[in-house]
Image 1 (cartoon, rainbow, N blue to C red):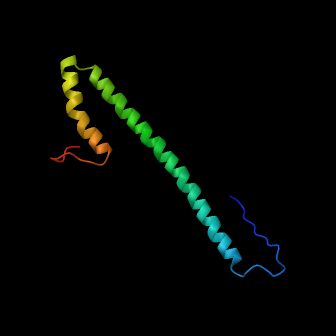
Image 2 (cartoon, helix red, strand yellow):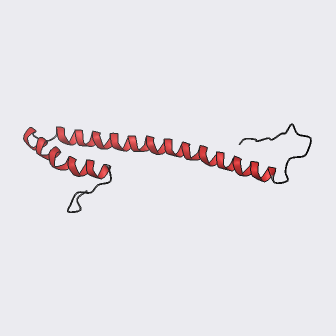
Image 3 (cartoon, one colour):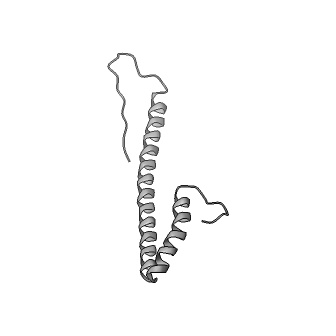
Length: 94
């Protein structure tokens, strides 16, 4: 919650729509702050998801014999990274 005030050094009163304009501006500022907070939360969430996926791939790779580990990483990392950047490989693989 916050407050907004307006003042003037002029002798004449402020225009009649001043309160509505200040209210509209305050609503705009509140929306911008909420959007920034939501974006920060989304970024943190994405970082946790990526870290969890990387950890899962690392654990999976450690359980495989070394010859299969290289093959598995090579074949699965291309679709994973391609999907991360919005491109899906031909054939519809994800």
